[in-house]
Structures are given as C-alpha cells and as structure tokens.
Image (cartoon, rainbow over all chains, first blue to last red; front, top):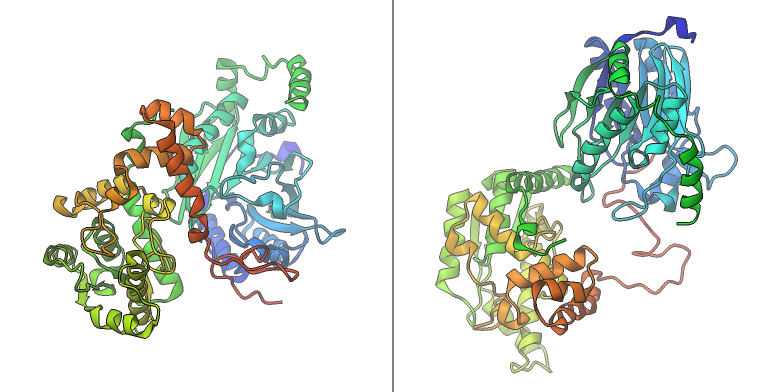
Length: 282
Length: 284
C-alpha cells in the first residue's frame, strides 16, 4: 500500500469481547459479529483482544489450539476483512512451521488486501497468575505495518510496560499503536497509566483493547480505550463486560502536540548504549 | 509500604459487583440451577449467601442450616433467618445430631475427648449434606471461607472448605466484615465473633491467639513479600508472633492443595496436566 493513499482520518472500533475458553468456533463467530457491527458503524479498523480466537486461559490446550499463520483462523478473518473492507487486529496462539514446540502469542492484522502481518509478543509475563513462558517462545521483532490507515505498530499487553517497544515502533514510523491485551482486574491502574504514558512520550495515538469476562478465577477488566497523542482518553469502553465503542484517529492532531512536547526531537541516542550496558549487568 | 488498616479498604461497590458477576458467570456457564451453601449465622456464610442471592436471585439460593446439639444456638438460627428474609433466599434446617451419633457408634476407636477429630466429623458431615443437595438439585456448593482462616489452615480439610466456588476466599476476615456492612448485613452479624462451632464455646480469635485486625495485617505483609522482621517492626509486635503466624501459614499448605499424587507417569494429575477448569472439547 503506497503511503500516498494513506488516510489521515478514520474511525476505529474497540471490540471488547469475552471469549469461550478453547472454543474457536464460538469466538470466531463473536469476532465476525463484532466486525460486522463495527463496519456498519463506520469503522475502518476493528481491534479485538489478545488471544481473542481462543480465550486467554487455555493452558495445555494451547498445543491443540495453536495454528500456523496463515492458517484456518487467519484465512477466515482475511475473508471477513476482505468482504467488509476493513482492517482487523486480533490475537491467537501461533505454532511455528518448523518446530511444534515453538508457540507464539501472536497479534495478527488482516485487511481488504489479505494478511498484512503478524507480531509475536516479545515480553511474556511469567509471574503472579501468568505462565506465558511455560508455553510460548518470545518474539524477536517489533512490528509496524504499512496500511491504508497509515503505519500501525502492534504490541501485546505486558509489552506496554517496556517503553522501548513503542519507542522503536514510533521511530519506524508508526503513529498509531495498537495494544491488544488480556489484563485481569487488579492491574487496571497500571494499564490506565501506561496507555496514557506511551501515547504522550511518543506523540502517537494508542488504541488499547482488553478482554472482558471471567476465565477460571481471572476477571478481565475491559476498559478498552483510544488515547490521543496528548494523553487524552478519546473513547472508553465499559469496565468488565463486552462492549464496542468507536473512536476517531486524526493524524493531523499529532502535529500540534509534537510542537508542544517535542519528545522525538529531544531523543538522546547516546543513552541507549548506556541502557544496554546497564541492562546487561543488572 | 506502611501496614495500616487502610490498606485493607477496597472499593466495596466494585468488590461486590466482581463477586456477584463471578457467581453468576460460573453458575450460568456450568448450567447449574443455583447454589447451596452452609449457613451458620456467622458473618462469612451470611455475607456469601446474601451476595449469591443478589447475583442469582433468592429463589436460586438455598442456605442449609446444619446445627447439632452441642453447639446449636438459637441466636445463630435467628441471624441466618433474618439475613435470608432480608435478601430473599431460601433456607432449610437439618439437625445433624443423629448422623453424628451414627458416626460415633460406627467408629470403633471413636473418643469424645478428642475434640478436634470429632469436630472434623461435624464439618465433613455438613459437607456431605451440602453435596447431596447440590447433586439432587443440580446446584453448586458455594463456599464461604475467607482468606485469613484459609491462610492459617483454620478449617477442616475436605470439610467446611469443600466447595465448587469460593467467592470470598481472597478477602481477609476484616474485609469480609466491611463488605458485609456495605451490602447491608446487620451489624450484629457483621461484627459477631467468629467460631467454627465444632465444640461449645469455641472462638476463632482465642484459638488463633490473635485478633483478626492484627492477623490480617501480618498476612497482608506476607502477601506483599514483606520480611517478618519488617512486619513486626511496623506493627510493634514481637518478631516471634509474626514468625508463629508464618509457620502456621506455611505448615498448612497441604490443606490448601489437597491432591498429592506421586509422579510416575508422563503427565501427572495436579502437577503437569495443566488444564483450565472446564476444558472445551476441541474438534480435530
């Protein structure tokens, strides 16, 4: 997609759903309904939560549920994106073509033109109630994709705690970060702060879409939101329950913020080497 | 972190709604008709019964009052009934004394002087009746254990702790008392001294040797990875008192993880068979 065709202004749908654990058929049906509703409301990008194809708490069933990409689930959603002429971002467990043991927690973007790309989560929480490293291999690449809606940078949930990921995506040209998430209730205050911080420090839009509902004892708090480059919450979905809200991205809003708080102009690359050195010697 | 009672203050409206949603969600997903719970007239069971009634509607909640002759108190029955009336759920009273007598006669080594072993028979007899009702009526057993007593191992293994769902197990006792008042459980019940009622005159705080207000702060400290010395310093109590609580907490872990298989196979129950609670049949 050539950048000359890029839209400056468009609507996105934060499609906050709850999932049936391990029931792809049911979840894909729910995703389809959400996409169709979003399309009818005028959205050009529909975002679903992390692991929305399978649900988040699937434990050992991940071995049966993970698919290659492209695979049956991504093809079904490619067809849907094509028919509805929208972009869709969603999450699913991916299995490598080369090794059955290499599973990834992956975000996928499909659009009218087909499979646009995928991002494999780099930071896998394995503490508290999370056990992702037990199952998943961490990805190695930050991922920003050119689309008709501009360059989109994908991140997943815990990645948002690491500002270097969104910084890198921004430096690669992304002006809209899409963060898909499966965050349980007690972490709400962290995410509400971090979503605003990542947008402000990078003068970029950030769309955060969290899971809703309860899986085993984990209650996902929803609260999906679109944050402006100045940190304003432009749209906010309900807490805890399924919801679908629209928000508008207008890239021309970035310019005045960049002039007001020019964080990218003031970057100090020489610190990055120090950071690397210090992190290696933690 | 400064260990003060304020740390235990939650947003009670949100906590109530989270618990009710959990009960509703779990009952709906399992296709059960409702929940049955043991109703002692104490703050834990009255609060959980009230929350369940709000979550499901009172007609889908059955509180079983299961007294026995040694510990039965009319005040407890009155308290249970007053909460049932206020929150609109059903109750039924079953005297478990005859069942206990049968157990006593049937066990050749039964010794009435061993209060703990006998008390455990009471708690387990209640569990049997609760599960019988649950099976017959396609209901779930809803537990009302709290975090303080569960961490301290202050419960009967396979007895009062046995349940399909435990909606308040992550709330300390003082938090349950606050939640109780928030939802409108009468103050006399919310502030009533806790007892497992396994023998006459038994009181939780006397047996634990510590007030819940203090115990909950110590446990909160452990929950937040604080070293015992720091907890003792902050609360201005002897380090040994904190250590005693810690020992009791750690030594009762076996009561909270009840299955212990020996690993002999490729994948083992409770160890490396790691499945969600209600796994979905995956089409191949």
